[in-house]
Length: 458
Image (cartoon, rainbow, N blue to C red; front, side, top):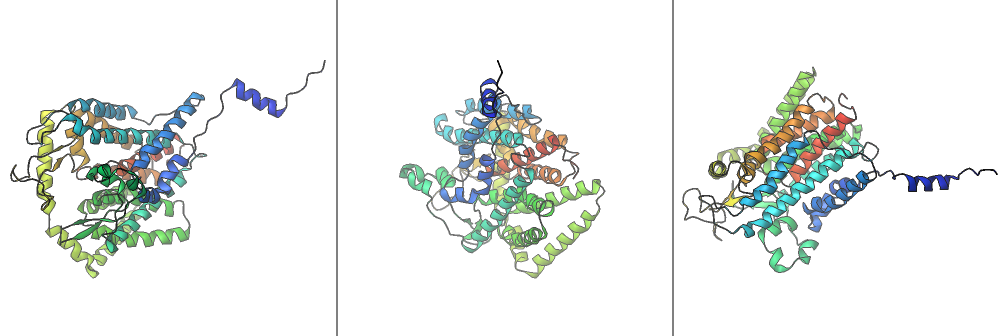
């Protein structure tokens, strides 16, 4: 009896029944967040898209693991696990009312704390998913270009905030919410798109760019986190035309960066310049010193020859937020000593203002009191909300990443580590959730993938 050779279809079928299928990770969950973020913002999804996309990402990771393919965790993940555990455990202290804060029931604080916990979990999924993508599934150059694209979006949002500071609209998601829900300030910050925050820092009704990131401080934080990726995308992976438009974008970006009156952004750019210059000098590439000198000279000429210099001078002469920031740092440190291990699970509002407990927020003076302890910087929020354990886990993870990938001299390596360094400097005055932390974990994922794939010298 002659044995018939199996047909290709039968071989494929046998493989399907006898062995697990190969499960590749699709790029669309990550790519669609970044490529279409302006659309998500306009729809009213904004930062919520990270939590929504975490669902299919988690499903795809589990499916891949079930198919027998290995699932890698980022280097130093034990530190991040400690941080996540501290976030959960510290919820048990939500009912505590530290001295000098407004007394509330734990249940009234739970929605905001639950939101933050969900976002931390969602960005953890993003980190693991982006780090497990292969070059065939999502090339690093494509991810870099997507991050560079978001810097362009940031600049365009800044220009929109300058020329149309009062621009806002009701998003589709906002329309779908009950009026009692959508009118709450916290919900408005999530689903209501607007171009700028109107503040009276150097003059009455001064618009400060915020689109599409929700807050001016977040806009400035993301500006620093994303600018390096535009440069890498243009000079490492782009053409001459791409480099020309990158130069145009960088030149134009000076205007909204100055008009934003965002001192933290200005400091962040300085930190980036110093760090990148130091990395290149240590690698023997002394030309970077000339490049930084030329860029600095051009910036100085721009400030002197245009009204932008007057804007900077006016901002430096008006430090209205300095006293409030100092007051909140003191309150955060005082609170930390009261619960140093696990913190209080979340932020608290102060009784009154910095001069008197009888001065509070009102319709006529929204910024007179009831300030948020832990709302003026990621570091202070970590210490106050999650104690020494949570702070050590959070800082330990990113610090370990900087140390682990310190020998990566590639363009991605320098830009990725510079983004993490920028996040460390920004945590003194900016909070990280949601988009700044998302871009920080994506920088970590690029460093991780670079190391795994051996692309650390080009």
